[in-house]
Length: 296
Image 1 (cartoon, helix red, strand yellow):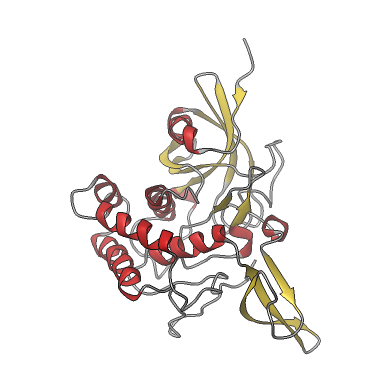
Image 2: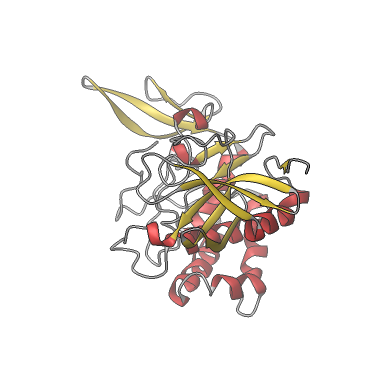
């Protein structure tokens, strides 16, 4: 019997195939993700002669969150993927909700080193499912002085010990800018550096969206560099199309209604409308810590 074909990171043409593989394939647990605050398992999934590495987060392994009393992390992770796909930017790895060895959970394509059965603290796994500081290599930096420098956007001053501070900056990269828009739409409460996964093909993925979609402003991110700046023409076009897809009765809205509450779905629509109305990237509200801790 021939060995299953190992699938690479997804491209536009094979997203549906990967969703089918993740949803229907046989899950085999080969390890766990170290340092995750919830149960995160590294698996292989095989179906129809094909296989891939993936991350499985069973709902039973989630710790309750006082400020997210409804739904679960797995559902919000899937909702984030669906919104990402609706933008056409493909910023979140293929993600499905399904039964697994430990019950229903989120299964997401692994973006990172291949599985080997060892416990992991890197790749698609770091905090909840992915990354370490090196994953964001070239996208984040600490610089001396108060100027970000050409090609970089300032975020905030950071304490680097011994009474010294440095300026935290991120790259002025269109991929990051798109991700900043997605985070604003889904109200991501935890965009850390370790949740940025550059792929070998040049694509950039964001992971760990379990604390998103809150009805109140919870946006916490390292991607504040464009705060207050006008949206790009591309972003306005994408948001206009997204607003249509979020209308009641549309397939996206119908599916999201199965994953998040009606109030949360209404908040998604309101955030998209607000972005289009203001025409600028959001700024920190001042009512919630603007940067996640730890930031990586």
